[in-house]
Image 1 (cartoon, rainbow, N blue to C red):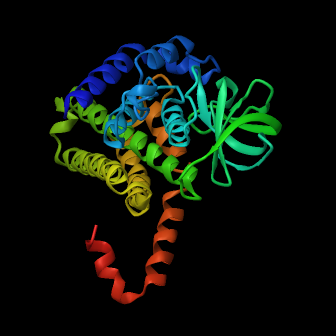
Image 2 (cartoon, rainbow, N blue to C red):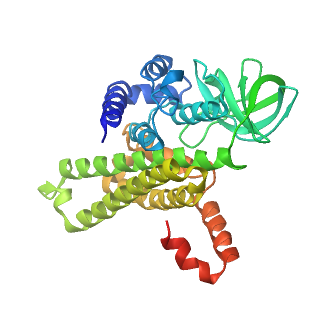
Length: 339
């Protein structure tokens, strides 16, 4: 790690490890937004990692952002931290000043007409708690206040707010930006992949710790070969996902929007790993892991929810498949190895 990455890692992991307690997450699932935690996250600049220093940010890269995003997933922070980080990057890319307060992404079909934004975002992360939303319409990034928006409350499997936000002629600050047509979905897949890699790391460490604590027939269950084999599979899945999201972020820094291949591959990989890892983690924990009183489900339910957001792995695999077929057989090997 370089100096900035060390600072980011110490800051985000120290803060979330201390503040994100089981009680806080349970209250968040009951509808209480952890405003004090959000204020600390914002005060530490964690939502502005990708914002230039001259504009009050850290001036970091996607490789730096990966540290924050994985930590958010590992500690199951009940905040739109990842969404705000990406929203602020979109604003910076378009040359729009980043506002203070909870900001989220508006993924949906929007139109801009004379500085007025209209459209519907069906599943907005923490929409009810957000002060601002960021949308992309016809190549323009738009910042809009959500104070007067029509919002229908909804939740995902993890009981995180996923609200329907409807805007009709809302005043917006909008500017053109050099972004691909699918920028919201593409970079949304990247931030969710990083969060999922972090959550998978938690499943691995938590399962190993539990296996060394839980005894059966006079010894820790982690001493039984069958359990060791399962833990090895789980740890391998978590490690592979950590590597592939780091690589996708590195390529986003190097190639810009041409890193779509690596981002798609990362989302496919973490989606596949989530099915394997959550199954093993619950098997290792046995009955206790299925109770609400145990904290394992906070991570597993998020993994089940996040894998469907910004394109499921299956959808990204189909896209890569169609692109590969269209390129022709002779391009297959160079396509796989050139990157």
